[in-house]
Length: 572
Image (tube, rainbow, N blue to C red; front, top):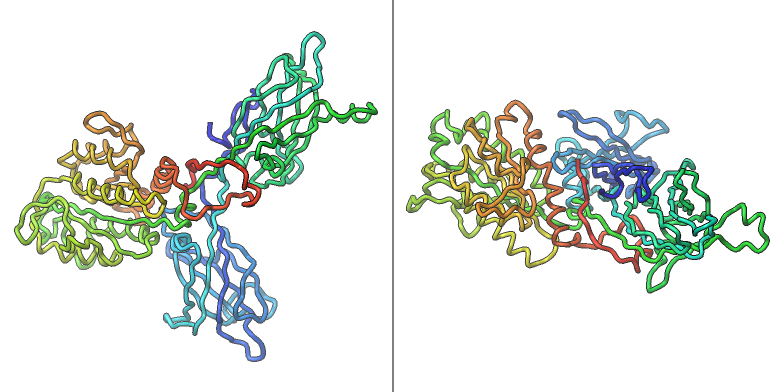
């Protein structure tokens, strides 16, 4: 069972606690520099309003406090937002000079500047600095806003605890006690939540309980000073367990373990303490070992500087129809982008926030290409084999439109050469052994692939590399056979029967999204990417680039053995 999930509360060995939320939450902190001075007698009194865009409408999400007479304010207010990789979450920061005590309405207040961005841009940079603009895209002098992002992940790892006890009181007449240990978390409202109940050790006053794992959010709500109430009982089969003793602990105390030293607590029975003069304890409970397993999330890798490199591969086989004909899937309509462009723009616009150089590889397959007009299943659509990259998504769109008149649509539909090429490229980067670059390959095709056996083999090989593959089926072909590549219905295997290491392919027919917004397509095909990124780096035991502090203070973990494991469900 994963840490933080519920087990049967009555069974010894139960680890309890609510299920961990599936959404990544991000905190944003803002500061401004060199704001315009709107007040005649003293400096501006700035306030930042955070707007979010929903269905094209801007609405206020929250606002900072007003800082009096300050052109370089650092605001204490923290904005908290849910983060989704697969959505373009548009934000707008507006800075106003607030007059008087009223805090609503900004019509009469002086507008000091604003800026638009996406939440993806902020988390990819971790610290985003942008100039402020007045109306009509005019710079607000030298004014700038700085936005810092931090993930507040509830799923912050888990701890493995090794408890034993010595010289416990004997509660049984004809044999020794049968002890078990219970740990309760004391909540903010004073209520107690059972975190773990060990198994029963029969007939033993010096029990060594099985080590157990519990998430930090279950154990102490990621607060290492939260009180934990620990009770030791003598098991009774009729349910009337005899109380041996209790003690209080904190996660901070537990972490004092290390260098061969153990942490011990006196197990106290309050009644005996009151009655008996020379009462010392009812035994001691010992924490003999503690292992902290840090769980990294997708945002840990992104904020650590991991770049996502986006490659698009476009199907130029003859089944698309002559591009000069308005019935062709490649027809360039001056008033409306075709399905290839719609899919490319929807997915590419989200991926570009995570690539600092905004250069994307654009490849084609299934066409005869100049100068010799031989069939190629792997060519740069800008016809530059030395550099297949285009500037931003617009550059890819232009390269696509420019290449159509120069090529002859042909066939067959072979995608394995491009998959193998990108897998080989990402394998070369694997030698770096850090979480610096991950690849997304978007394949746009109008039919079932011809080289299915080779494609399956290529995908199995690619599943060992930092790569995710998205296939969008364009047009009205029967794509049933393509579903085999998406491992959702079972594990994809190579023709020899070797399974993929991890599920890296997502296939969707574009027609399912014809009437929906482009955002819906992007959301569907990109939703699995964050877990695929985490799965890959976790399998390789690669941590995010700068060491990410856990919810505990760095000093307290100095002597704690740690290992990284995949974050489960860190995005919706």
